[in-house]
Image 1: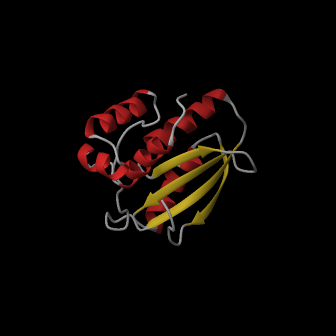
Image 2 (image 1 turned 90 degrees about the vertical axis):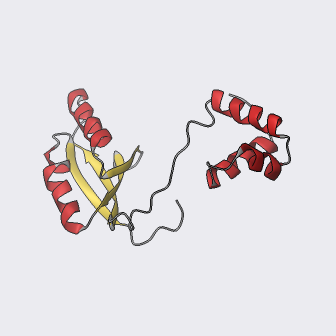
Length: 147
């Protein structure tokens, strides 16, 4: 694991804010030459610190106005049932993120749907049909403050 210095951290903060910024603009912002900046970004990519580049989508403008955090408890950790659960998590577009956690819930899902009816269909037709799922508690997201 590479030791990151202040300049590396500056580069990462800038790219988090705008991953499409040009190398020239990035270099100017962090106070490096363009070639030195390019080498540092490449080194961060090769070390796996930068895993990739992406976009942020406004769910509401896309028509996905219902968002929730779903706390899922599994019945037992049977390998076949767990595999089926994880496969569903990976393939369902409603599930934006999934985290295995400590505490009462085994997994926390970030879910986005068009509306409450679509969310209810997701619960009934997908989540509750998975044998591994013992229960799910929904916390509706009222507004996002960060992220």
